[in-house]
Length: 379
Ligand SMILES: [Zn+2]
Image (cartoon, rainbow, N blue to C red; front, side, top):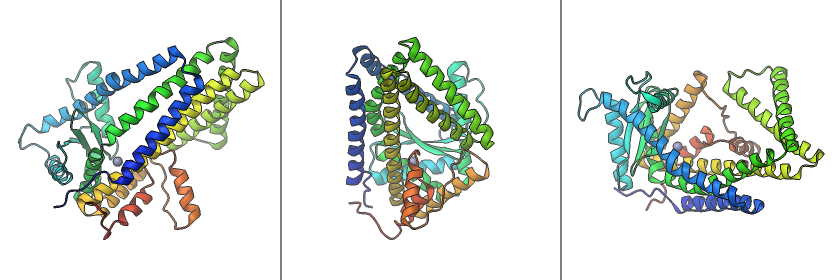
């Protein structure tokens, strides 16, 4: 059987492009502030702390949270092992061979809704929180753990999808690992995190550097809060509904930022205008570029999955089933519109995707189904 290639030239180009964009924005922030020694030092130290301290700690906790619950049903060949977990393991092994990976990703089946008793202490509480979080809605994901990656499939997705669809989803997750998406994301965050920390710290320092600046900041927050309250009452929004809560949050943030800009100009505080503006634009630009890359990665993992399974429709059907389940159970669901084939809707669809890590399901579906009978150059 022909070996599949996880990264095509286009995928390499996508990554290079995002290194350029991320690096450019980050450098722009440092140059705009003229590399202030203390804040630059703090930003770099903070980045290293997150990368080598917090990051691995969270990854370890995630792994432990799921692998421990796994050990309760599975003790090396124990017949109590969940049959689906065994099946997923088989798929992952098969995909690993096809992709010629050095290490087989570990496959984990997260299916515990109740806390693991005896998992005590602060980290135990955190792990139980993670277990609960993992089982809220149908989901599968991959994360980096030690040398090999781990593919996680949770209980709800296993109940919602049939075996063919689930195989497509598992192939997509293995695709993320094979493409090295975790390593690439880490690399990009080495560039973006220092810039975010630098402009954030600078904004805080500038805000607290004088009573005037602090007063402007405080007033802008009050204005944002009032605007949020008025919008909530005027439009009859309910903060229990995730989409409406997010809309309110965004409204408050926009008004607050406009108020900071307006007040800084009106009361003559250029330092405040620069610090808050730079922080806002740096964070926003990096977030949008990061999400753009994330959506490229999803398309790439979809393509790898289609090639691995030879059945692009399986993943496409699975995605639709997940979407229907989110809609039915009123989970954190962002409305996705069926695309109509004309330029205007195509443009709007892309605009609607801008703030999302995952592309519109219909777009993913269309790309996947377009692969039927049209094999890629996978030499
Ligand atoms: Zn994905």
